[in-house]
Length: 365
Image (cartoon, rainbow, N blue to C red; front, side, top):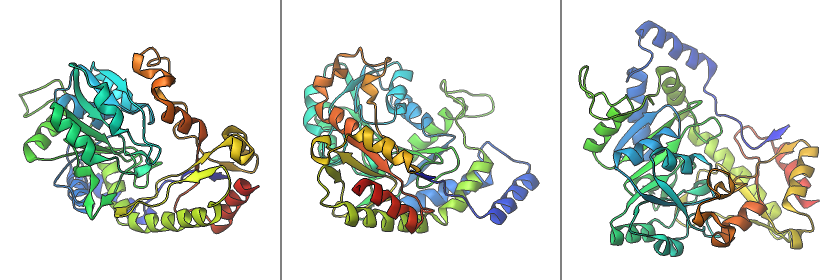
C-alpha cells in the first residue's frame, strides 16, 4: 500500500535512552529539560528568535488570536485544514473567506482589501503546501488598515525565502508537528513570535494563564508539550534534512515524468525558496485529461495508491460555515475549482523507487 506520507521516526535505541533519562529525571511535563532543549534547537534550526512549543498544531492558532486580542472579523482562506477556521470560531470571531491564487493556493491579496470592513481586525493566511503566500502585499494591506497578521504555517516547516525564514513574517506564525508533517513530534506544534515579552505571555497562556504559583494573568488553556514528545522531536530534528532531501528527489522525479501530460498541472519550485516538499499536489482538468479527479483518485486506490484530496471539500462548504455570506461558491471560484481538481500524490522519505514509478504509471495511464 502506497500512502501520501509516512511519519519520520527517531532511531529506536536513541529514543529508548531518552525515555530512560525522562524516567530518571522524574520530570515528564511543565517545561522540562527536553522541552527546553527542543525549543532552543528548533529556534536555531528554523532561524527564528522566539518560539513556544505546544501539544498540537491547533492550539497555537487559538492562542495567537487570544494573545493579540483579536475580535470581530478575521479574513482567511477556505482552502486549508478546518482547524484554521475553527481557531477563529473558538475565539468568538467571525471568519470571512476570500479566494486564493492559482499560482500558490495561498490567499489572494487582490481579494483581501475588498473584504475589509469596520469589524475586521486580522488576516489569517495559510502557506498552503509550504508555498509562501505573497507576504509583502499582505503586510502592506495590514499596515494600511491597522490589522494583525497570523500565518498558519502548518505546512511550512523549514521553508525559507532568500535565506530568511518565512515564519518571521507577520505578527505571529504557527506550526504543526503532526505525524503527517515533514517534521513531527507525534502530535505537537509551535507559535513563533517577534519579541521576548510576547513569548512570555504565550508561555503563560499555554499553561492555564499561570505567571507564578499563585498568580493567573489570563484565562489560558492547557497546551504544553510533554517531555516524551519533546525528546521524540529533538531526535527527529537531527534527521529531518535527510528526509527533506529524499522528498526533493521524489518531487523531481514526479515533475520530470508528469510534465506535459494534458490536463495534469503541478507546482514547480519557486525561485529563491527553500522548499520542504511536504506535499506534491497535482490538479486534474477532466476535460483535458479525459478522466475526472475523483475517477483517477479511486482508480489509484484500486492499484494500492492512497493519495489525499487536500483540500477537498472547502471549509466554506461545511455545515458550520456555509451560511456565511463569504462562503458562497461565487465568491470563491478559484478555491472551488482547485478543491475539485486536487490530488496529493504520495511523497515521503520511505517511498521506494518502485512505488514512485507505480504512482507515475497510474497517472500516465
